[in-house]
Image (tube, rainbow, N blue to C red):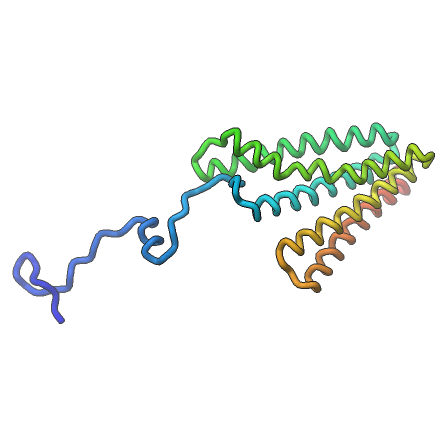
Length: 205
């Protein structure tokens, strides 16, 4: 089948239509065009849950690292204050960098709603330290030495890592074997923090 005659009367293939924009091509294929959006959309529950778990893991690791390195140098109260101040600085700096980077990619300026949503979702970065610090302070009040109280708090932090690892596995709908592997890796990281404390005690004091 020949095409319609061209301007000079000769038959030829039909002229190709002009290139369509990316959004039109996506819509033609049945996929709606999605513009760039902030790092954390207010209605994105899945992403919010992921950031909560990630913040909890990050906060627990930072808490354990501080306990492992300065636990023998500071009393329990001073150690708790140091952990909270450090985590607050990390929390604000981390969200500032994430928001700035995501909105550079989207060519948009972050609004107060974006900032509030991001900070709220990652609040677990600080909240993850509460249980280890409560255990630390409770042990100190009960009469334990600074070293023993710090060890108790560090153990609570290691258990917190396992909890967040299991939560991540369930959120990702992983199988039982994969969840066990993730929990084992978190336990290994917790043991590494305890080993760091032992190293500090035996080689740096």
